[in-house]
Length: 265
Image 1 (cartoon, one colour):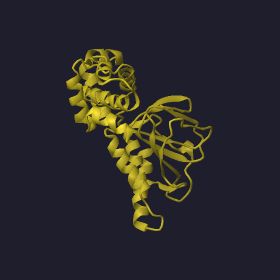
Image 2: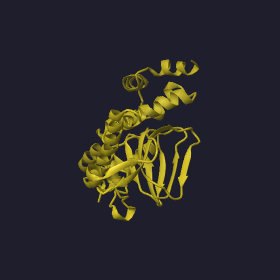
Image 3: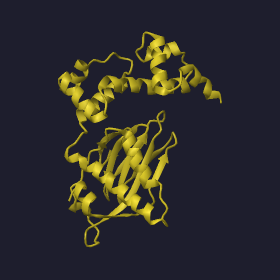
Image 4: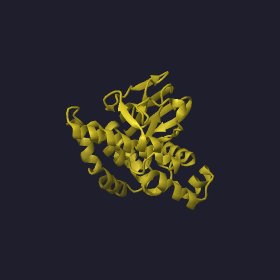
């Protein structure tokens, strides 16, 4: 029985109300043995997670399925706080009996949706419910099944550890003029293979993804540091400050000076 079978046939019984956590900067979490099955969906932020000593990244769009007795340790990047959706549940078979962990064949790697917004939309369906309203209870129940279907997509996985490592490499030096040749070589892939697999995993081509990452970091630097716009522009690999500001306005929705002035409001 895998996640696809569960999403189609099992009875899913929530053991706690689904929760959306907006984590404080010092947040970390540890469980030596989970008591229930659980789904985590990462909506915003970044960090690291260890599941039974297997280490994974936490990034928007990543989704995890945990089992009872799993050992979990998680921590976030204090500069990029997490928002995460958590649902805890019991799994019953067609006779109403609890399904035991050893009876399942579950995906142990994180699943990354092609668009983090889709994960957030599903999570919101599971969160917005009234226990006295039968229709909303059904919506919540089916939202949980949809999340299992997302995880079941691991049978045709989009998550590729080679691409994840290249992603970490990009984050380590956002200002570098990365080429597909360099990133492909770091992953053991040809440039065309890397571009195809990266686009499949992140839902957008490598260059567009790099620009979006740079603008996210630029937004943080504008809001949280006293670096000049020229310094921020250079730090993120832009020799032309005017071009940097146009990119910032296009993707953030405000020009950097206006955003910086808003800090004092």
